[in-house]
Image 1 (cartoon, rainbow, N blue to C red):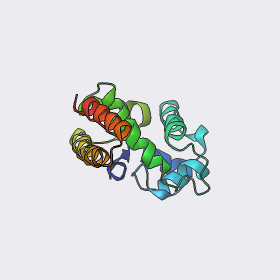
Image 2 (image 1 turned 90 degrees about the vertical axis):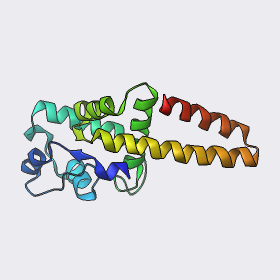
Image 3 (image 1 turned 180 degrees about the vertical axis):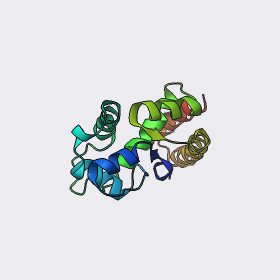
Image 4 (image 1 turned 60 degrees about the vertical axis):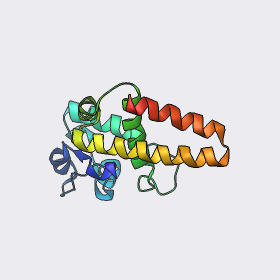
Length: 150
């Protein structure tokens, strides 16, 4: 999954703030626990703090009992990538937005591969919906495919 490839660039700075080693994977349970419960936000620089706050706001807000380990952060991250693509950003630009807004490093090639896989999944959903006579689902998947492909 694409979220497993997302690395948080400021992970070493966060380590100094929490006092122990953490993985740099942005959606690893130990990373999520560190930034949600152990990090003193006053100990990190302003730019990193803003990225972390945006990360927490956009990906970690949910009402699940097991949050942040409920799977919602990864789903929201996937949706953010698709939304950016549907807004017209290419894979290089999406990588830049993720780095600027959230401090997340993700290779453009990984994003491109994810988007291609997403189109294939949507095509399969579209075919099944067509067979089932679900016109609304067909219409919606067709729209998403068209916007992702550009």
